[in-house]
Length: 176
Image 1 (tube, rainbow, N blue to C red):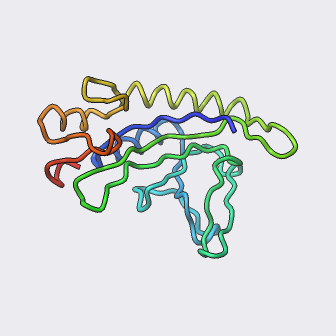
Image 2 (image 1 turned 90 degrees about the horizontal axis):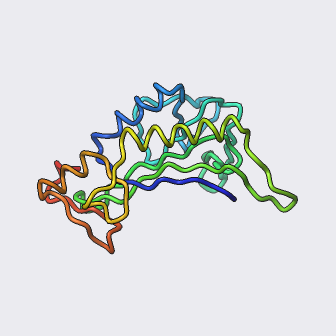
């Protein structure tokens, strides 16, 4: 499988801006997990940590997970970008990284399958625009991309790195 991925930290206040950005670039947003494919609708705001970003719903493949009784998007077989929202940890004061991810090619037992050139070009363009608009690396980054709201938290002394620089802890829940 050949894929592209951007890992980054953001606050909850960034999410609406992200979603507006995706929509302004003519993308639609579906949940990653659904109970009934007949009731699949675009989301306004996520209730789950994963969102599917796409242009053509005919190029999405959901697989039924019988044991759990729901459908999950298969990102490898779909022309979609997987948006994983930064996860708030149980303590309510720290977060793990979010990401944008998609596959350009997948290996099957038979061959290498390429996704459409249009999808790959559009996805690369969206990544570039997203990084340019929202993500930065600064002296606080520790190799990660950060949104301005996270950078502000570090500058104000409200955030610190934990767990080998894989988790950001805030001094108050209001900072997330």
